[in-house]
Length: 220
Ligand SMILES: C[S@@+](CC[C@H](N)C(=O)[O-])C[C@H]1O[C@@H](n2cnc3c(N)ncnc32)[C@H](O)[C@@H]1O
Image 1: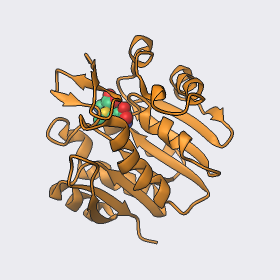
Image 2: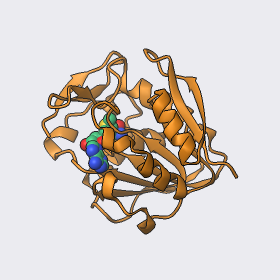
Image 3: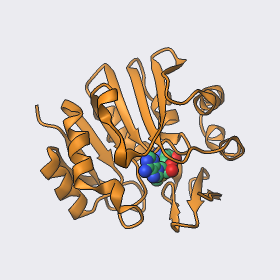
Image 4: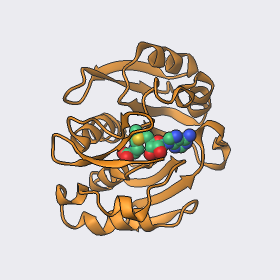
């Protein structure tokens, strides 16, 4: 998969995939979008002190980095699946840590350099497991149940198989009661599929440039 580095409006980088005509993040601001969708509406809404996060699409590692930077005294077990891992010559050019506290550069590198398919302690209270696999055929039983899902796949019209109802049902079945599900997507059809899969869904305000996004909770 070819990818090009693009500068977004908040000064942070994202990647553009010509083959799909799709960006990894909002062109209005990659850091701004990730902070809004996954951190403010995901991590900060979880009441658990120790939690298992499952991310769809490790990609640039931005959501993992922002989670580590904002975890406070929570203990995080972060699982992230990725079918097309970035190469060192791609991730080493990303400018995220220039916009974040300098001390995060080392953790960002560690995250990318860490071995795939095994748990790595990035710092105290943050364990990362990158899974080199295809989400659409993944067996969730090998992972602990999720407390928070960051669903960050390419848009439904670009990669419809990632937004399949059976897949959502598997994710819901593998989420603890009270667990949360967040995605930047606000489409009605996606919301209905998630509701039929077992999440209680709400539309909440989206990041700059996007009116709404989806927030879900698995009922207790
Ligand atoms: C919208 S990007 C977001 C990536 C990441 N969360 C970030 O912040 O950079 C979607 C990601 O899903 C990955 N992906 C695409 N198809 C996949 C599949 N079948 N299984 C797992 N990951 C996939 C892409 O390679 C890409 O990294």
